Image 1 (cartoon, rainbow, N blue to C red):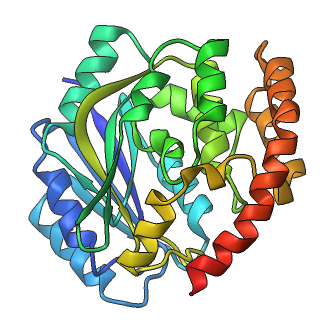
Image 2: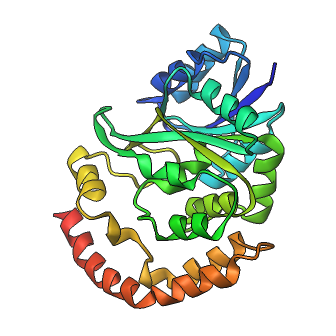
Length: 295
């Protein structure tokens, strides 16, 4: 039987982590290791994780000696991985019982490198906000059509979550070499871009993963816990979050890094430049949008 390694990163996750761990331990596919790396939490995350590690031998708890930050913690659990497949997990997310089973079946039956399912965004209280069905359009092998769809698809809290799918372990390590994540705007987006430009993906139509918006997954996190604010961020105008003009230089360079070694760089560069005037208009709107969020 194939072996799955789940790397969970956490920082002050006491509010949600029990629910997240329970949803993973309830998976219908049982052959996995859940490795939890605690980035020096100051709440009772440690006690909760140690309890689960004592109850279930599949759970391994590790506490960092000092706070290393979100993306170094992501890299730490990846470097600790063994087995055939790997997936990241956040301490505040939820998985239906067949998530791993369905993803694994799709990788093996459809001969792809990475599998994911449609994602449901929920707020801090578990209330449904949106379903990211557009992700299914990203299924397939790398192509201009797929990449243009990814780049032009509204960014707001969605497509970057491909990184939480199930990966062949050698594939995810290769993606990290192409685009190592760091604490900067759009890093998870660029990582997912590197994924779909180099490897084949399948996104199942089943909704088996719930991404919680709110809470804190690292010391660096600034997520807002207010469900009303989160609803406004997602629902009102997702196009506000295409092509951030104020960060366009870094945004452009990130695309070129993620696409290195592929024939798609000139096409995507042209696509970004053609959209630059529109990104400026969106940038002007965002200034008012930020004022709206603070009211």
